[in-house]
Image 1 (tube, rainbow, N blue to C red):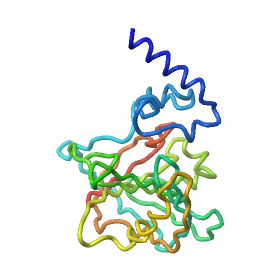
Image 2: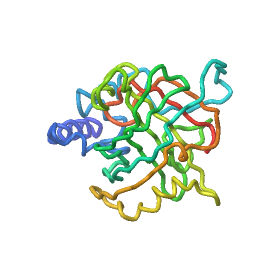
Image 3: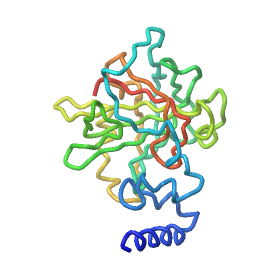
Image 4: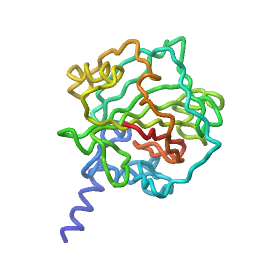
Length: 241
């Protein structure tokens, strides 16, 4: 009887939340967490029915080496934008009036992708913050750089629904004594975005310098890790925190 009551409550709660509120209402845990995203909104059905969902647990001993993959390339010029606390994540979005966009190419990518945003995922007490796991291990944080396929699509909104529309570059973050200077630019303003809805500007961020000093990476075809879980993302996981 308890299971039936909970089920009715869950459906009632989903019906109560208007369609206009979906983007604000979802979370990463509880009855509005990933297990229920596909039930909350019909447009998010890939979250429960998809076959190439991200994030994943990466098993190093099962990876295959591809000698034909190229090096990852990001343009060297810097970007400015706004860091926003969405209530679910901290998200940096590049200024819309940017004249010099950063292009992402190489690796497994057959097209050029235009950098658009950074998602920052971190845990409490410096542990279990990353979305992707390595051999079951969760890093304290994960920085995800997203770009859209500028050769086939006009913007991120269009590309996220389309084949090969999105690239996600994942940087695992480990706590240490020598922080990355570009990462420090981001973390230094965290105190200004402690609450949902808060914004703060970030100026002159070098994405190329944000990447770890390595040419090695793992890649797979998956999905966005937030609703609607579209399976249009080429993931590149850099192998050095």
